[in-house]
Image (tube, rainbow, N blue to C red):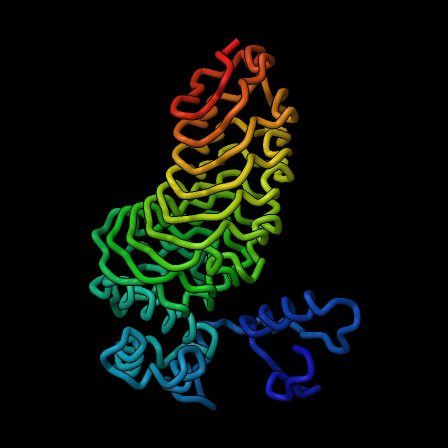
Length: 345
């Protein structure tokens, strides 16, 4: 919170169950120096009516003045919120979630699933304990739209699956605020802009599945990926990425599947890329990688369980390590269209 007076809390403040949850998380991150404590009151979030704020206050607090423009997803969600009967019975944090869910669906081109029912009953929305939105699953629904920055306010989200649609635009950096997120599937869309946007805040420490392949993402693979300590699958195949492969993936002891293929990545192969204990699949083909295969690659740390290594269609030179013949589980090795000077042992 720092020294910002706009984020201070009166010493005698009383908060409901939802806001207590949020403030306790803030204090947890603040560490032992925090000088206050939030007490959780057992007040049902479905029975506390808004009294000191209007429904439009919610929209403005989350989205700013764009919520006053009826031509935007935020404005359409705000107008709907004012007419929605259930919204009049919700406390601040539940009302905020309902508004954000409506903005998300309007922005994705899925407004048709918005009803007067609780948002946990909307198609594609799954909740935890029938209260907090934990999953958004709308794969292959023919959606045409974009992901709004408001998605970062859904702080209980664990799964986002919007793959195989026609979504476009840049990926909002607010996604990286979702510190509970475990699975992110955005494959086969038309997203553009820097890949770095989606991970720049470094909060995705619980993320296990990262699939953004078959898009139009640009820029480099950011070093902040090193902060994604739970990563198992990292798939950015067929984008417009450039620059070197950062030396961070070898430190991912849980990483099983790495696919950086069909981009414009350049530079040499990172020395420690094969040191992961669980790496099974490695796809680096169809890039502009140069240099020799490092001697550190002679032995994969998980050599008996490596299934596939794709290095084809690059600018690699030198030879193939003879020790690769010991990888008894390897069923697919592709090294064609390089500049190797020695034949396979």
